Length: 188
Image (cartoon, rainbow, N blue to C red; front, top):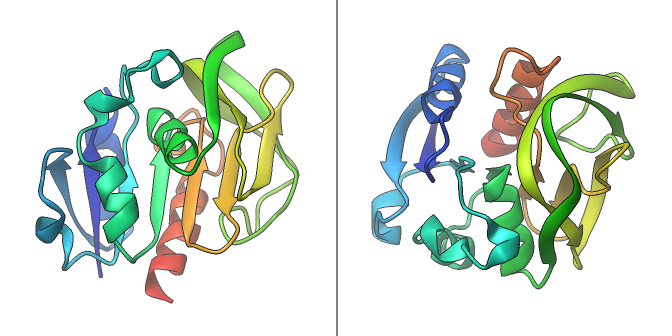
């Protein structure tokens, strides 16, 4: 199985790649300018986060990610700015966060679903964002924090997921399990 990490400028891109590699899948980092044809042998994609302020009109710096959402048929997990891009691509709204989160936050699982299967209802996660999703039509809410409603979601009919928090960093409890759960979706 092969899962590609789409580089959107996150300081933790290599961390995502390493976590996936350590979980036993073939993985590689690919620039977000890669043509869709360059992804055709992948079983899944992970959109890294990045410095783009999606809620302030900077989604364009996320390269071809919108084209991937239109043309790639496998599962996609968007992290941080990757999650925000997914929301806007499907008609959602991203805006400056009322309370930007930097550091540890408590996340509450609202709906267990595939991504959070086997996790406790509440866990600590690492967040680093100025913007947040404020509406996500066509998505199911999976997890929230005290400050942010849309911390995680899943598309209603596609295997497309997003987390505002960073499952790839050590500070996120159960982050490895979340990535394992995403890989299980990729295997289906």
